[in-house]
Amino acid sequence: MTVHSTDKTIFTQRESEARSYCRGFDTVFTSAQGSELTDAEGNTYIDFLAGCSSLNYGHNDPDMKEALINHLLENKMGHALDLHTDSKGEFLRTFEEHILAPRGMDHKLMFVGPTGANAVEAAMKIARKATGRTNIIAFTNGFHGVTMGALSATGNGYHRGGAGMETQGVTRMPYDAYAEGVDSVALLDQMLSDASGGIDAPAAIMLETVQGEGGLNAASPEFIQGVEKVARKHGALFIIDDIQAGCGRTGTFFSFEGMGVMPDIVTQAKSISGFGLPMALVLVRPDYDVFGPAEHNGTFRGNTHAFVTATVAIKKFWADDAFQRELAVKSDVLREGLAAVADLVPGAFLKGRGLMQGVDVGTGELASAICGRCFEKGLVIETSGNEDQVVKVLAPLTTPMDQFRKGLQILRDATTEVMAGRTRIAAE
Ligand SMILES: *Cc1c(COP(=O)(O)O)cnc(C)c1O
Image (cartoon, rainbow, N blue to C red; front, side, top):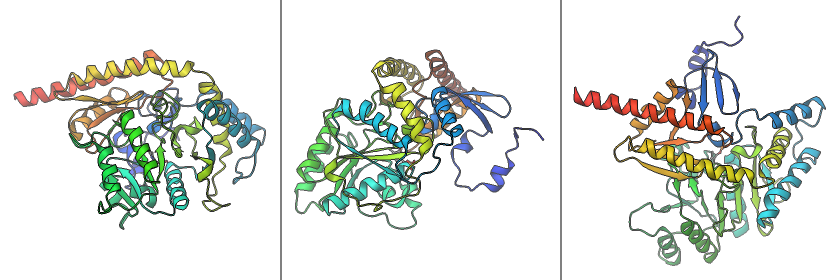
């Protein structure tokens, strides 16, 4: 028996048709280090997907790994419900010291079941309980998860269709720059102010500052400030879903830093554990910390392994501004690299900001052809957007510069080859 089987029949025969990423990256992965993946045949790939931004610090960070191994070797708590543990205490102290205090945030941390959707569910429930209202405003192309509450706030019709029933309690409004010539904030305010506007007074207005799944639409600071103002004016809580855009992805720990806003609630998941371990939390202003004991409970609210790695991640990357300065440089390199890719495709343009950027190549078919060619050339990269038309770079933030440039070069070469193939076909 070989140690690493390259046989994929078990997946196609026994795993549900609901599987998705594995279809585009059709190999058997066996190990990963930093920004590189290795498959069962020994091929290596540069990872520009990073678990959809769940691996912002790369795979198997040596310091997080060591802390986790020591935790296991010392028989520290594995599962602990939401009991006090030294690991949770250390995480809370670290998060307070390096994240909340320097940013003047008085939010409390509510741990929820370990997925992003669970954090969004909790956020929506908190807003409803705190205001006594049911309606929540979400935006076109927003993605907030696929459990019922979160799904109602998700724009994508394919995902909402999976509910098998009506998704309820959410009014969808146009995101920033959604319709040409329409001021989305003014429209929202006008409709909420109009007694015949048809929108019930909202418990909350919820947005992503950069829509991760929705095509890397980056809202302007003016839009985000405007939405906060409208929320305050109409007695609604202001929620930022920072599950994908947070943890440094846009260049700062929170994606809304420097924009002059202070959300009542922030959701975090994906990279919060730092190591790809399941972990999610809700940051909530003390005034809105309205749940009683176990009112939104969950068996896995105290993933001690994730607390251990999350603590290392914050101490290692966020105790000073060195990492943030590196991200600013890398964002510029990314923008330049993607501009060169966009130049190869007529009509293509750049999307996103920070280390969350991509190229809109016009069609999902072309974007998927480019990503497919990238994979053949040793780069894992995915699409996003309402038509999957955006080639999206979500490299680990820690990717060494030479490897980062190499990945961008593969993307450029793959785009050149795909476009040349099309020119050839068109000419024949
Ligand atoms: C991924 C994501 C979610 C859902 O997180 P899961 O862990 O997949 O449930 C919610 N909101 C945003 C912005 C996301 O990117």
